[in-house]
Length: 314
Image 1 (cartoon, rainbow, N blue to C red):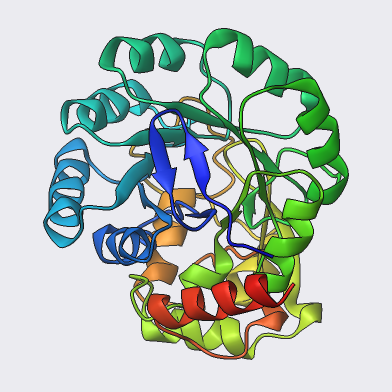
Image 2 (image 1 turned 30 degrees about the horizontal axis):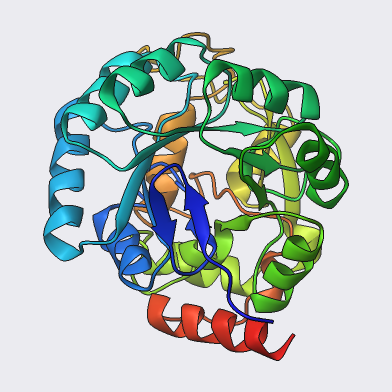
C-alpha cells in the first residue's frame, strides 16, 4: 500500500498519523515537534497546564519544527475557552478537543481560520460536528486510553461515521503499529490517532519510571476508573487504583477548581501529574487497551520508520 496523505482543511500530513494529546504533560513540545518532523501531526496537550505554559510549549514546538503542530484541550477543563483562544493567538495549526463538546469552538476556529477537530464516538455527533464546521472528526472507541465516551470499539464506529459525513475521519483507540494503521485505513478512515505508542517514546515527557511501569504491565493490570470528569477512564493498576477499588477516601484536601464539573472523588490533575513525574504508586497512569503490544521505548523516528515499512508491505 502506498502511504496516503492526511488532508485536514489546508493542512497536509505526509503520513496519516496524529499523535494523541496526552495530559498532563505527557504530550509536550518535544514529542509534538518530533512527530511533526516525521510528517505526522503533533499535538500538545493543553489540559492541566496554565495558559502561559501552553503558549511557551507552542513556541518551543515552533522552534523545533516547521511541521504541523496542534493542541488538544479537554472541554471539561474550566479554562477551556482561555486555553483555546491563547492557542489561536499563537497561530496553532489545528485544535482537537474531547471529554465533552463545545459548539462555540467552531465559531472561534472559523474566526481565527484554524481547523477544529472534535473527538466523537457516534455518527450522530460526527454529523452535528460537520454541520457546525468541523474540519475533520477523530472517532474514538473503547480501546482508547484516558477518558472514554463509549463502550463500542472504534473499528465498529468508523464505518458508520464515514458513511455519515464528508469530512476526513480519523480512527483512534488501540492503534499501536503500522499493521493497525493499515487495518483502520481499510475500514475507510483517512488517518489514525495514536496515543500510547507515542507516550512510550523517547521524546514523551513522561518520567522514565512511568514508561518502565507501563512497558512491564500485563493485560490483567488494565483497569477502568470513575474519573472526576464524569467519564470512565482506562488506566493501569497500581496502589492508587487499588485504593479506589476499595472505596478508600482519596478525596483531595484542597481543590484548584480545574474542571467545570468535578465529582471530587479524587483530584484527576494531581494524580496524573504525580504519575508523569514518576510516582507510580500514588499517580494515575492512563493507557490504551493494547499497551501489551509495546515491548520497548523507541524514538519517534524509529516508530515512524516501523509504521511506514508496515504500510508499504501491506
